[in-house]
Amino acid sequence: GENVEQHPSTLSVQEGDSAVIKCTYSDSASNYFPWYKQELGKRPQLIIDIRSNVGEKKDQRIAVTLNKTAKHFSLHITETQPEDSAVYFCAARLPFAGNQFYFGTGTSLTVIP
Amino acid sequence: GAVVSQHPSRVICKSGTSVKIECRSLDFQATTMFWYRQFPKQSLMLMATSNEGSKATYEQGVEKDKFLINHASLTLSTLTVTSAHPEDSSFYICSCYGTGGSGELFFGEGSRLTVL
Image (cartoon, rainbow over all chains, first blue to last red; front, side, top):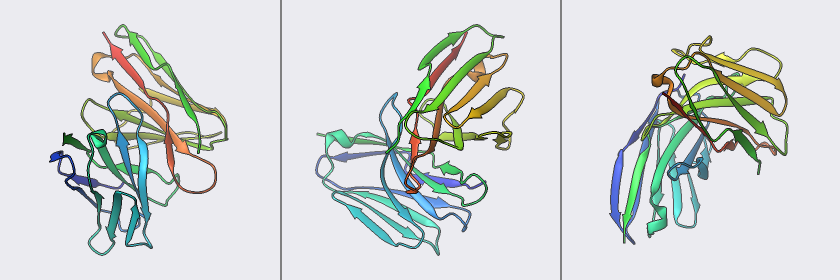
């Protein structure tokens, strides 16, 4: 399967500052890279995604960049707010058989008011 | 979007018993469902891919005789933890693709299993 690494594991920022989370993947065949936000005890929710034919995507305060050559992608959150505090997971999808998703190790983001 | 429902949300059982967790796609048909396991403050680990009408595909290191998966219909997949032990205590969560071909993965609410 795919191996997805994610850094940092924890991140604290002041409200209004930016937060950046980085992921790398191992299999160059992966073609879809979503980011999920998970609040404590709840299911993960998709916040943004990017496909392998795109280098950057933005949705209001959230943006994702992808470098296929280096096999890494990043999540950028600007103007952070306390409600952004959660665990964020990156994932990579392999387009074989069942199109499995493999998740990064997660980043616990705390936005300090 | 898509609605995925998982039941039960919490279950406590004695060591040695078996526990069944259900995952349903409520407003669409899912030929493929994924089962993940999540330990506290850790990532989602893919356990297996559940395929309707055929055997599940298990990830390396996951015991298929321990974690029985059945996907008998297009809207229901079940995970049975057999002869559960305390080390099986975890958060189990299912997921599947929604309709529309967006590729987005939708998750169930998750089931927290505690084995005493």
